[in-house]
Length: 183
Ligand SMILES: C[S@@+](CC[C@H](N)C(=O)[O-])C[C@H]1O[C@@H](n2cnc3c(N)ncnc32)[C@H](O)[C@@H]1O
Image 1 (cartoon, rainbow, N blue to C red):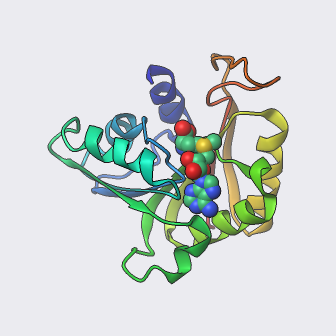
Image 2 (cartoon, helix red, strand yellow):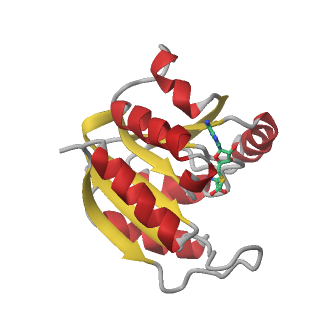
Image 3 (tube, rainbow, N blue to C red):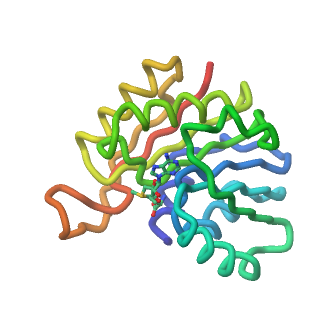
């Protein structure tokens, strides 16, 4: 996680102001990166909403993060389909940050484009959307899809220290990171 911490700090620079931050961690799975998100984005406090379609992973996240966060950080986890965000009245529509680690465009381009679109609609006008990717080509396709929805690419970094995964060719952890704005 040290590497993601470093990568995120590099990618967002001074992009976080002096206020508490609201962050949507979309398609978060077990949300292993929750502490890193709290440290990098939450210097003035943070409210993290994690969301995934898989219940079991979220149970693990809930159990783990009910105790391991700093006092000024809170995390809650919701089982939800990311393509149905627009129907969730209880979810705020002005998140400061929407984060998607290892976005999964290749697992269904139409579905994931819908997830990106709905995520952008939940982002504050001044907010940032941050994605990471496992693969080069999948990352580039996600960049295209997100920009075609009107977002502006602000930062795009190939992580030189990305840890190689052997289960697929050309796959590595947080291989790329990109930051978008709405304006
Ligand atoms: C490649 S995994 C990444 C998980 C986690 N962010 C990580 O980096 O370990 C993709 C995640 O997307 C979730 N997912 C797939 N389709 C989804 C949907 N329609 N709505 C919400 N989550 C979805 C999966 O359950 C899975 O946890």
